[in-house]
Image (cartoon, rainbow, N blue to C red):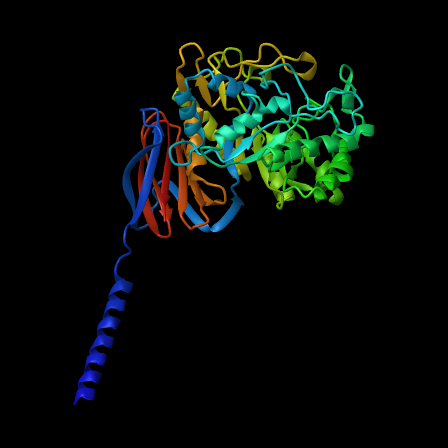
Length: 486
């Protein structure tokens, strides 16, 4: 009798479980919770908004965008700007608490922008401003690097000091290009600024000593970029870069035991990268040392040329590693610098979208911090550092009033750097709508990130379709909008 009752109970339980499974299978999918963050002309600044929800349905022909996360493109390596003496000098004019507030706003991934890919530099550039033009070994003929020294980088306004202070708030990879080697390695600093090949081994040791000295101070340079804008600064042609990399720098670093990888060099414009990089990359013996092909964005065009580079060399990540407003780089003199209005961020958001759609894996601005005059800049005419050299930064600090301005550029860049973390993968986002752009990413944990820009001067509606669910968005005028969901 007890066995018969037991069979009846088990049978009823099986029926109940089956009924629950059928019910759950047929029940409409639960709404998908979506976190929302907005920056807008109306005044929002990385502002968290009430959650939205995906609902079952289709866009029914309405204007909007569809995300297909089964189609993946490039893995993202990070977003950020540049660590330069000028920026730290300006920060150091603030009271201690305000200094830390600025660093937190730039590097903290929860409270700030969470910059994750940063540029530092080898010795002098036009904004290494804490002293005169310098290299790490100015002693002529010192091929053994006996007089090599990074003492200046250890000073209160120095690069190592800046890097360590920034890293109190967040982690980031570092890439480091060089404007010029020591003058004595050039044929002639006044008339022929190409590197004399008899010093290729010495220059390779110069790079290595730089990396080793930084390691001794607890800083790994993740990517060494051989030359910043070759032809603009060091007048070295790409066939010479190929030989230097293939026969000198590459082998030396390979046997050094360091983790540092090599970047090809940094062309000033996209078209120049497209035309010249094959000189290095089509040589297998040189190409094997190239981990990343970086380029600069001062042309503000030719994104298709970067997409072509990706098609030709799909195994080599592309990074946009420098761009800014600067009169010396072609910004019209009628355009007041630096820029304070939030709406300027829309221009920079457009640049980020364009480069990422062309398959860039990182996006790095030039000056992170400058003063109200767009400086201070360094001057060395023979090294291409003019006076004046007014530029626009991510953050403006008025050295007289101590007022701190987080520019429109800061907020548009922060929407990417805070939410599209390293390791996220850009996925297919199709559709179009006048004045609106959308781009989606999938994080390693499977969570989704959507960035939407509304460049219109009025509010706008759009619809996002994902896995046969729709998300209805109301976009403020001139805004950037981040959506996150699991």
